[in-house]
Length: 402
Ligand code: MG
Image 1 (spheres, rainbow, N blue to C red):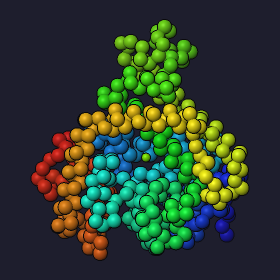
Image 2: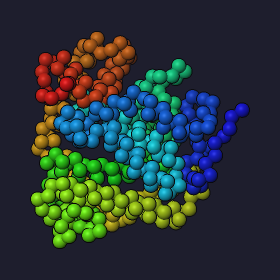
Image 3: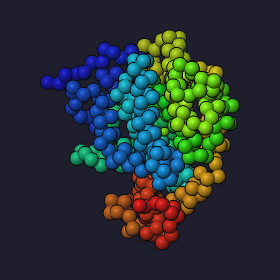
């Protein structure tokens, strides 16, 4: 006998386990675990999840031990999304599953790696990291006797496929007509849990990229302090900043005391995080009151309901614009980007010309370019660098491969 878990704490518009659209291959329930708890557990035990620890977020993995990696980024996204989910009475297990898996399709070397691989695959259907994340959990993880992939619920897969071009959606639908690509052709929304992770991703990276950017010395404080969102968060709090001069008016004026500066920065980042999450929760509550969806299916038919207020959206976009120009396009970041591109491009050429250089389960595939792309996409930064050196004799990253 199986006990169907119930979730009395969840709002009616949340993704309840009992209303799940299920898995591609039916399995007996895992009670007392809920279905989405099981999704989360499978992701944590996957190989692709473990590899995130050695994949670039913004800074190439070997540039410093304190910078975010894809793994710590994913954990921060899960934290932000879960704390908002609890307040909104959404399904925390589903939120956590989607957050932990949202970047498993990322190539080594961040967006530079993805752009390079997309270029290599231009004649063979392209490469897109959201689609690849779904491919990882649907096909590439091989741990179960009865099926490929992790056999996640529809709701987890729907959340993982955050974006998808119409062309790719049409291709996915040809093999799975009611699959997670359906909404990209018919303009539907995913669950509130998926919508929430999407914005939690933005909240997490904007906040932690400021931290990493300042720590690396690539970002400067003064231009940040001219942005309303960051300026507000860093205003000096007379009650909170013990050890700092009470006359100091904020982070930029903390003077020569580097330790106090650091604490003031963390305080500012905490406030920034809270301001974003509080705004997100308040606006989402208002949207839910107005739309009053009866269940998760009504959520899918409604416009996007998880959102920031319009002023916060504008402030956040301004902050993102600043990070884009000042950090992601910083000459030093661009320099590693150029190197990363050449590693990925050279690897793609080497493996397509000499498939025997790949492990047995990749080299015999009917679609060789796709098998090469899957193999490269799964690599960590340092493994890709090492393979590049082995196959070309050239060392692109001086500290890689240690
Ligand atoms: Mg992300």
